Every structure is written in structure tokens, then in C-alpha cells.
Amino acid sequence: MTLNNQTLVVSEAGQKGLGVFAKAPFKIGVLVASGKPLSFSHLKSAHSFQIDVDLHAEFDEPARLINHSCDPNLGIINNQFRGYDFIALRDIKRGEELGWDYCTTEFISIAIRDKCLCESKICRVKISGFCDLPEFLKKKYEPFIASYLRQLHQT
Image (tube, rainbow, N blue to C red; front, top):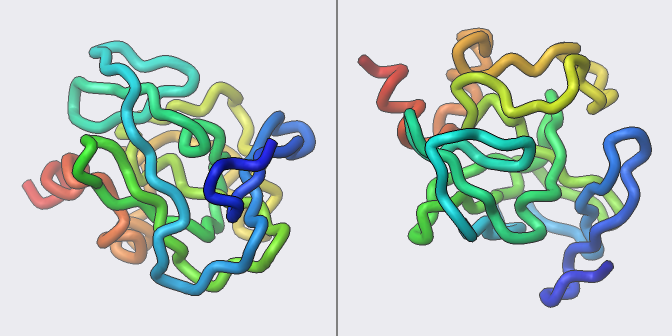
């Protein structure tokens, strides 16, 4: 399935199920996708994004289909829709799967599997959430961590 902007495509991503892939290259720092909430809940679901301490949102596609990576090529920033924009953390090649670190939005992980499937060389094996994210990664990701988590981390 090609998305309306012609730069992203949803396709099979092996044992992860569906994933989102770059149909065109992206330069570091550019907006790759924008996640807009379709609904809100105080309960998390398998595909919800945590947007505040006690608030989760179901996002539109392609955001809801972007998989986790322990070595992400995307970072998130809060957007005007109460969702997240996905920004290229490095240059992304055509055909590359897009990934973001779930721990940058989830205090406790939303991962539906016990074991990470990202297959990166620096895979942490278990996705547990921001609460267990090593301090050096919190510092590395700092501008790309959900605002509610940055506020919690500062207190």
C-alpha cells in the first residue's frame, strides 16, 4: 500500500508484521510522517501511543504502523494535533524500514511481544519503556522524547 504522499509505503516487515518503508530518501532533520490522533483513552492498547501520564491515543496511518527500533532512524516530537511528528535522526535511504524507539513515548512499553524484533546490532532485547531506558539514551534522545516524559524526567 503506497500512502498518499508517495514517499512512504506500507509493506510486510518479516516477523514484525507490517512496517513502513521509505519510498524516497530523507535527509537528517526532515519531517518524515505526522501522527494524528483518531481517538483518546485512559487505557493503552496494542497500537496506542502514550501522549501523557494517563492518556493514550490511537493514531492514523502510517504512524500507527511504524515499528520499534533500538537503533531508530526516526525521533518523535509533539505536534499541534496532540500527536507526534516523526523526524529523520539520520539520512534514510530509499527502501529502508522506518523505526522509532517506543521508549521515547511510553513510560511502560506498549510492545505486544516480550522480545524485541528490531534485529539491530545494538538491540536491547526487551522493550520496557522510558522508566528503564538507560540514562545515556535519555540524554541522546532528549530532544526527541515526548514532552510529558521530559517533564517527568526533570522533576
